[in-house]
Image 1 (cartoon, rainbow, N blue to C red):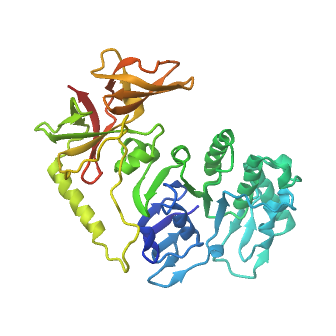
Image 2 (cartoon, rainbow, N blue to C red):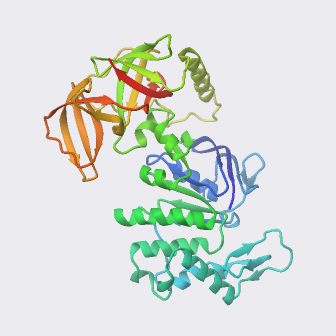
Image 3 (spheres, rainbow, N blue to C red):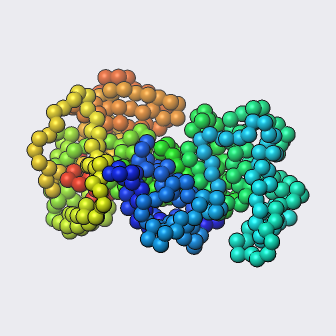
Length: 442
């Protein structure tokens, strides 16, 4: 169990910033997923916390102990940080039994202050005085019995890795990682080698494991479904820069910008360009989908003038950071996708403060006879539990999810509306979230 603090942590190679000024607080017993596209910096972040990669600047504290501080010249090696590792490659010894694989690391521990409870939990007291000692055979047996019971592999203790399935091998790797009682468990895409059904089962096992061990888990993935289902908080990174750090449903329902909104959610969110201004009552009167007039009614009132002033101040502060070298991987605005039937020419005009992006999740698309928006079915993909429908509205495509065994024919004429108050309004100038609310057509 450990609390982890990262303060202004940066990792660069020349002008390339793998991680850029990251400050993060991971609470004790949290399950945090580092999420983002390939090359975004999530694995580098994990490796820096673990001690496998040295940050360029910044400070890292684990369980109250400073393990890295560029100003103070502190850099505690990975084997002294009391952390566990679980990677995509199980890395089991093929010539050792399951028992021997789990026990191998325990036999190499030699410290003062070691003790083992009657339940088989290893207690390590780094402040203990006296002579260092190794664990006895009986103590190792207790520990192995405990962790093998946690991951349910007791029947396979005398088997070799080659005699196990992929899921069983991963359980052995987890047990081996838990055996030395690490303060933090790091996992780098540990389920990516498994098939879809087994991945679902192992997600459930990892969730149960987190509760039963009480440890702090840091989990790297590019799979947003894994992040949503496992995490207590999601740390979403792009181009080395933190985009949002929140609970999963907050990231989904209230994304901080268009990148977050687009990355999280399957099927993806529907983006629609809009133009208009804020009215006296706080709503936004806009035109969208080329020909429809609509009102965006925010759930929480926002003064757009003050909002823009605060956003511009925040952006200026970020851009004014002093860097010793020019950043080669530039921070560029995210090009959010607006789905269309045919490609359209890019806008050449300069965007202003009356340009918006409205995002509507597929589950808020409602198909009904009295819907004010006219369209036709572009494609329909039933799965039994639900049907994903793509709807052509003029040159635009909207994706909706209809629950139940409903079928649609391609080319079928339909009407739709936007239900609920879960729509999101973003500024096209900076891509940031203005607020959540309801879209009323007409």
